[in-house]
Length: 394
Image (cartoon, rainbow, N blue to C red):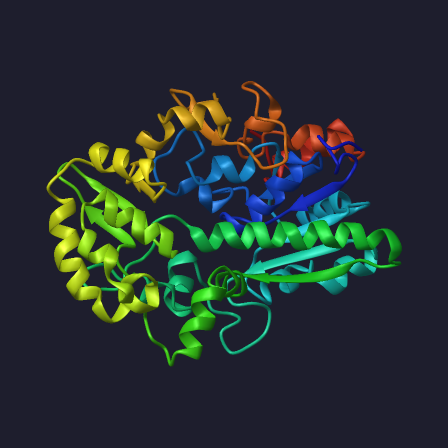
């Protein structure tokens, strides 16, 4: 065990698909665990088919599976289920992302797995959780953005609710789940049995939005718009985000935009004071910001220590000198992807090294033969599984 690989020696069986469950298991792999990804023999993890394909991967499946090994198993026949039971033997963590009830029908529900491996930590990731009237409903990130209020809060200047395009709820579910597993691994050192961890996109979405959720409830459901000068503003050649909260920031902002009358108005010193006059303030500030370039305003706001930034595209963000110097993103190569890809480094972990197994996501079934050999299968038994279609190799 070390800071670089604190989970070395741990064995994780990951039968989840998509992003939330797999990304959680990927983080366990990055922290040193031996993560075996079990995939269907036909399509593999369905994230392999989302978006542009690079071999049998996409931008969804690569970051959620780097550092793992893959075995493709048909779990419908008894022979396939027997293989999975062999893999589960001595496992520390089991990750599954089926809708409630499905994994039980396959024979691998928590009670069944815990009966064989009492100290296993069993993580279930679903849309709405394991119980309740919506538990069996299929759900992905956009569904939970709608259900939990995120879209209603995310209104543009057009007043229309919008979906956040990146998968914020999937990712937060993965990170919350990883935190829960990490805490359980520590506690298990002093516990005779493992436990079942119920993780859901709904629960993660609620946690992610706790500040807005709480304030909206306490304010009778009000959707609060930004109080100027906080928000997105159009400049002569683009857009910029500006955040002004404290009185000294407001004073500095008024100096930067040469509006001494605003700065001298005692009512405007705090967000609460500006809120009733938001339309009046915006009617002056928005046209004013449109008269000069983003770079010019940035220089003035920087001088007065006003929180702001130009709105970057993802490619523009990746080209920022600060991103390179801070080491926030590593550039690695992946099979079938025609160029280096950006891989954000994980907080607290060594940077990704190009060519390392930590940076490569497996092809479907790529390690099936090696995994079964490690688990005591003879070559003749493996050949029989392949001929029967129970095992598909990469």
